[in-house]
Amino acid sequence: MRPIGQKLQETFWRIAASGLVHRRWVLGRLPDLPAAPPPIDPPDRPLRIEIVSHCWRYHHLLAYHLSSLVLHPPRDCRVTMTVFYAPEDEATSRMLEFFSEQKVPGVEWNWQPLVRGELFRRAIGRNRAALATSADWIWFSDCDVIFHDRALDVAAGLLADHPDLLCFPREHGVSELLDSDDPMLQEAAGRAGIVRIDPDAFSPELREKAVGGFQILRGDAARTLGYCAAIPFYQRPVNRWQKTHEDRTFRWILATNGTPLDIPGLYRIRHRAKGRKIG
Image (cartoon, rainbow, N blue to C red; front, side, top):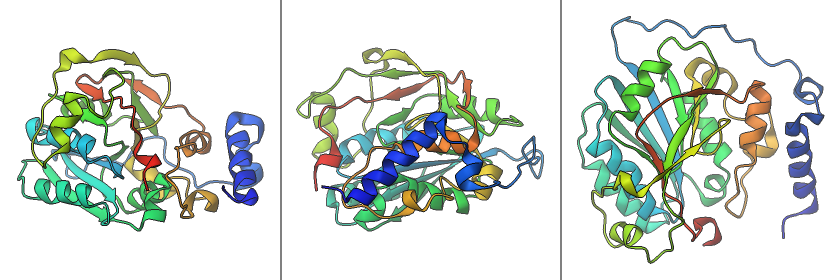
């Protein structure tokens, strides 16, 4: 049972983010950001994108997430793949060790260990990554997201010189709701290795705002604002894996739902067994 004070704070921020509370009433004036991103320097260098994911007891999904970068390495951009994890999650640690040995052109692996309480609130890792990133854009993702052929290169072309602070893919493919014994999940559960999806097994799903693993933030905004950095409640460790209600708060802080982009080759694995209910 969560303490009453924590429940009240969570309720307050969810109500505030619904638009019933003006953000300046509780956050004051946020730093001003330029209307356009800083120019690429030097102008001919590839766009840099940092992908940030969290993994707790989802090593079988992480295998597909990271395999997609090995199988479909970016050609027109450079990617830093950041994964926050808890070392005590041994299956995830073994998966990360395996992928550390995979040399992928245009991809830099960046594994970030956290204690469980910090890992369980994704805003903590996202905020740390945002404030520290050197990328032009930072993509807050999840380990059930797959970047298939040309997805990141098309995204880089659309994001280059894009003036908006927050973007998201308009459409991505989703699997059926898979049970833990589904062959697709079992293929990646037993051992660390490269796994592939069948795109024909996914159905299209439309998005209307930046949510979950589909939040793409301009790099200068990330370094200035972080991810819910102005709200201490979302930067405190917790004892159970939390749903990302702060997604909505983040959009409220930015005063935008994001701009949709047509990025092909994105997929998401839907799964019935939830890692947040384990440990």
